[in-house]
Image 1 (cartoon, rainbow, N blue to C red):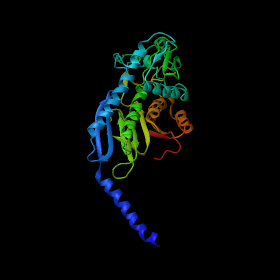
Image 2 (spheres, rainbow, N blue to C red; image 1 turned 135 degrees about the vertical axis):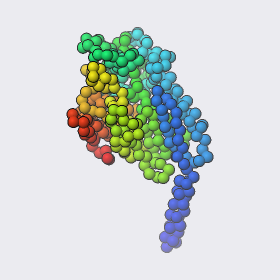
Image 3 (cartoon, one colour; image 1 turned 90 degrees about the vertical axis):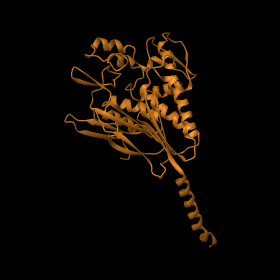
Image 4 (tube, one colour; image 1 turned 60 degrees about the vertical axis):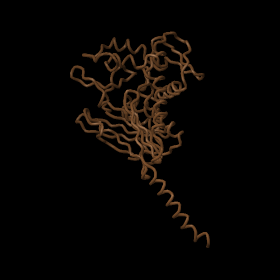
Length: 339
């Protein structure tokens, strides 16, 4: 009987402690630039916490990743590897680079080559790289020539921290997966500093942990896939908790050649920009590195093959948006995703 008498008191006390903790906590917003884009990080923490120190640690970690995988930095690891022409020569890489290359290899295999981190020669050929935009479609001969140096299988990723080229001119561009790794790395920094409720976003790729200050789940929007549309236009919004989400699309980065719009996403299997009706893909996964690479791969694979792949994968879900010839949009959801 005594236990029953005191139980409501403990429940009330516990509820009061929770309410007090929530009242003292606030949503801190950190904003900065990295990887040619912006980042936004929301952390639920006491008002008195020093967020300047937290941001310093985040920026330091992002700089490490840029030094490893930025193709715009002449002396980054990836730039030095791309300049190397010796076949079979071991090239020592950092743990960051090695981790991303291992995930990259897995995505290349599971997608049947729809994602390929060696597609840079085709990106340059189609005018989406550092060279000037092109005025006419490349010839089949030029595409075939560029494809000679495309193929992730031309890189050996060893288990002892080395990469080796199997073809002298093969190069790596991890732009479609490195932002996801950046998100995961920042999330690890925030988590290590003792925070359990936060949202990390870099260039539209996201990882959400815990919940917001009001106890509600983080809600993440998917942009409306419309050319020229504002970044604030939301097509769908999903709850995200202890999960990552990455989105890829053809509606912001494209070129018009001869009056026809060409997507910046190249099918590494054919050498041509994708033209399958897919305008946006979003993938929810345990980590953002995987989600980022898969989102790009689904753009190439198309709705049927893409959804089949998602349904085969454990703890991975997604949405593929297709524009029909009449301009209307059709959603293709994988099994199990709540929407």
